[in-house]
Length: 100
Image 1 (cartoon, rainbow, N blue to C red):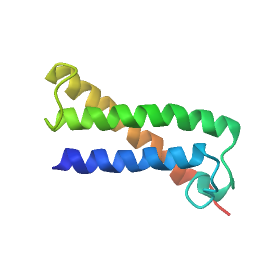
Image 2 (cartoon, helix red, strand yellow):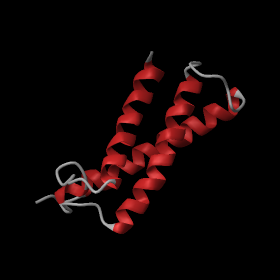
Image 3 (cartoon, one colour):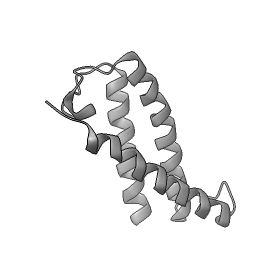
């Protein structure tokens, strides 16, 4: 059940990334409110994050034995730890951003 909740939360981030890619105003949701619309560089970063988040959601579902395995269990555990560290570190810029 935890894997499903985590995957749903990751997919919510994917939905938010898609909204930003479609140039909808997201000032209050990202970058500490610094930008009304995502910049061109920001949109490129969102595409990369979008693909990573989908992969992470699938990996999380695999770790929870919800979907069939792409990798061996040991490889999945190691990749899962790397993903957890990446997601933790990716939160830091958002916390450090100075909003208006």
